[in-house]
Length: 206
Ligand SMILES: [Zn+2]
Image (tube, rainbow, N blue to C red; front, side, top):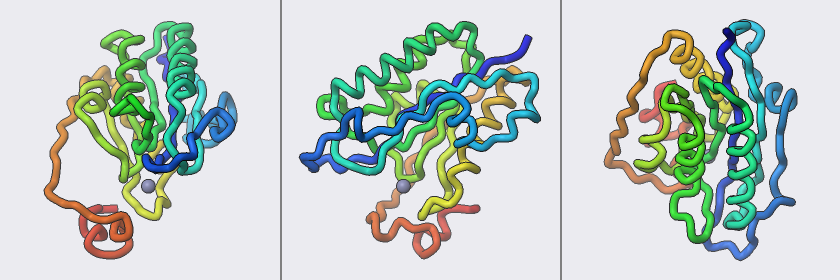
């Protein structure tokens, strides 16, 4: 029987102090073939997998995301996930810098909810921005993790593919992966976070 991979996500970057709240009209939703094309993966090489592109909500960086819209959106995705039975893996496309007033870790909230709707055998792979915020909730609820290695980001599709390849490998080989999170004692300002100049150039091996 073919293995099934569900693809979804919500991605934006928020300025917490902005008064401009992001809502439905600010998000573009990629679905079905458009979403598969956007990820740009060699799907045909994996004919033992059925890819189920659901919805990817994305917006340009803006203010906080409206809480009602956020809850409605994640319910929308999780309801679709419940209807798609026997899912073996999930690819989550996220940014990692969302701010929703009243929810301290929106990405973790979303990922935990996704995890609660599938069996323990289902593996979850997360694709992230290298500037994304990581939390214990996220680490506990995913099996694979990939982040961009470049800023400015020129490896977006490679990162999606890496996250998907790890997931496919894990599912087909029935591997159980463990993620270890190590904080490094480095703090760089946004202006200094480019990986084409020091100090970040030497941190990331491309
Ligand atoms: Zn970024």
